[in-house]
Image 1 (cartoon, rainbow, N blue to C red):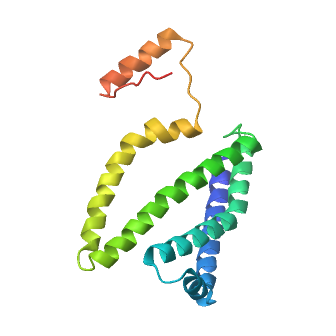
Image 2: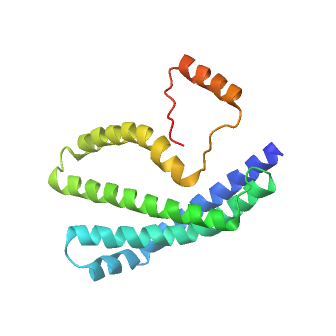
Image 3: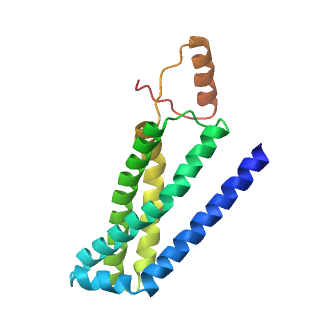
Length: 177
């Protein structure tokens, strides 16, 4: 079953990547990108915003069938018990968070390209390191709580064993239930 699921997921990911590549090529080669740029006007911030927003949501819509198939696979193979409603809410949360964070990153990148044409890549590298460190702290505390429910263990003995294990590993356990 694991091999079958892996093969199916690999085929799905390959098809999704190929589809995204084709969609982006069509967007660029058909003149849609130039038409969108011309429609957006002159302001560099606004142009980046419009181009990014259209491309982000078009690719999200193009990827939606693959996401639906992926959810069906997880349910069929017993890896998820999530309802379609729950899946849809998680997908909407993921879309909103991903769009917001990626928009900020793209706008900052284009600003750095305009303002620091010779050294933008060093600044992006340093910012990337900082974002990675911050995300490693923020993601488990904030983002995981948006998508997963967590409850206190009903078994105090098991909880104590996990605490001892966490302490031995040098991990801090947050108590926010």
